[in-house]
Length: 102
Image (tube, rainbow, N blue to C red; front, side, top):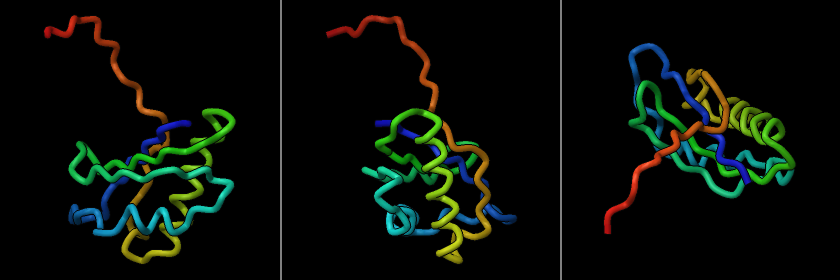
């Protein structure tokens, strides 16, 4: 399973990400996408981020499925049509070498 982040640039005027974005994306999923869950981070900086949890054979397939799913959702929902995908990729997380204090 892969977590793919979609970074979405808002249309001019910095409109908020439409309510129901997660549902709009999930509604366009087909079985080949391997979609398990959608999480929306509307206040992420510098642009809103949508997290897609996808079952896929590999990283490239997961990223391609995420981008295709976004394009279908954007085409099907006028409220998303002006939002631009800036990237669809696995988020890189820093390695933290500190200790957890109990």
